[in-house]
Image 1 (cartoon, one colour):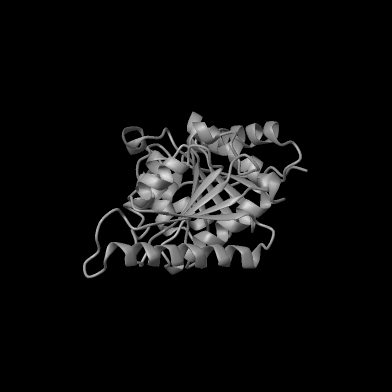
Image 2 (cartoon, rainbow, N blue to C red):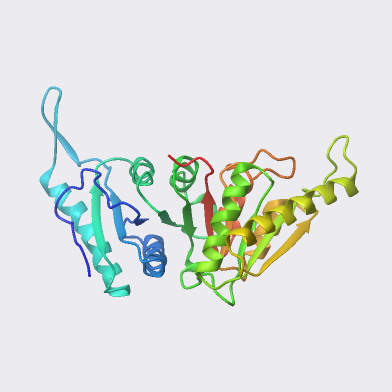
Length: 300
């Protein structure tokens, strides 16, 4: 069953519990659309195709202090949204799909949509540190401010979902954000019949007043506790732990080569390479070849 709202402005009355895909008609957005449609079908959720049209010509000034939307610009914007809905229906004809067009910045539209969404899905123009810089500020701004998990998908991850051949890998540092990331990762692994790998890292350097053996032992205890958390909510889930002495981003990016998803928190407060959005999470989004989920511990 499909539901098409394109042609009427949404007024931000988005469906609750939807998988929301940021769409602008470009190839990386189509990659996110395919991944998001698959995810919506897997979890039996509605799919919302969201286009934020915010560019010169969207509004005109008929008089001092007066503004209104240019009908031709609105029509062109709605056509982009309608195209996204049509592409999603081609991928999954049975999905409940809606489209929304907002005249605002993409970051603001997606952040506001996250208040009712189950998941936000965004596309990336590529991976690697140079290509990752092309992603711009939207994904990072949304991942830092969204109140639901945000998944960033690049072309290589388009057809790779968590499953028996593609584990879910989660990095944790013992913080609340790390715990939230572990819970999300466990749910995603269990839902996709995938295994879960819990990763902690000491960072590969000596912490002041803490010797190397003690540091590694603490990191191992942290990983074991996170694995126990995952098993408590999903007793049948296969969970492995991994402790590395190298930086967290290096381990997680390497693990992404055969992962179905890498999961990190928005920020960390632990002593072991806190997963701070802006450092480790940025590096993982830039460098991972799998989908990357960024999870907050403080939903609205």
